[in-house]
Image (cartoon, rainbow, N blue to C red; front, side, top):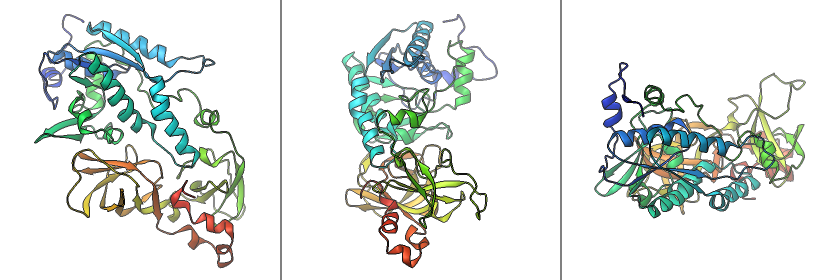
Length: 416
């Protein structure tokens, strides 16, 4: 490290580096930091080191690239991770969790897409790989805690660990961490939870971290540089079918309904239609049994909106609330501001009723609950309820046809 790694440029670096981390730990605690090669995990390690800890680094390989790939992301990531650890003068360990990822994350990902749902593999990757396989491996190395570059916070209240939103709402990642349990949170440290992205970048640059200007990774890790549909077609073959309006008019062809998600606009291949206004088309339903993709025109079309959602399971991070109905907020996708709602128990899951209609609630995506900045937990959406059921858009004659009867099942993708 440079002789003066914490220069002054208007920031109070002492506050940024040494204070504010929600869960201070003893300097003699053994901490293993997940080093991905990105700037966030690098600054997480830097902050722990600056606080007096001597962390170990651990690089996880979670996916085996195709032999035909000309670009190996894992090799590049490992090189960046090693450069960071060399700069900080900490030891870097490596481990391959590709087998665990395939069995616990990717198989689920494919199974969900096959029945028409849209899963979020990052949620399962966190609960099963980064905070289970990684945690177990780190504890085998003698660790008391693991740390990552996630934008989140953990606090403890009367022996109950709480997952809290980051101070940077735009980067908050509690949505992806909502399946963590008490054991996992008790060993988790999030050194960036009280920082925003600008501070992280500025700190990395001012301290001379070698990856300070490296671009953030986006998207699903195992897809990499591939187009999503091309990648998915390797495992779930194309199946040509019709694109229809809710009234049953055929207006195009698709390569497989499973490749699309509700609310999607891009990639439909539908231009202007005679006798119709020029508004864009959006996916409103996927009829898996009939291999029919249903679309509507207009971003604000009523059929794209729902006022409730149901799950068939529910993971509570802490004890389940005692009183229902529960007033709280629900988040149905990353970066969406949590929306006010009422939650009721429904069999083994929950039923959420929103105060205002929500656009493109999607089966398979996570529905995550919050009270203030505390993440209560969540579960995948099983079904939703459109404000205007598709059946109401059909004529009396069409309602009697088998095709129209299938169309009304849009809210329970994969269950027919």
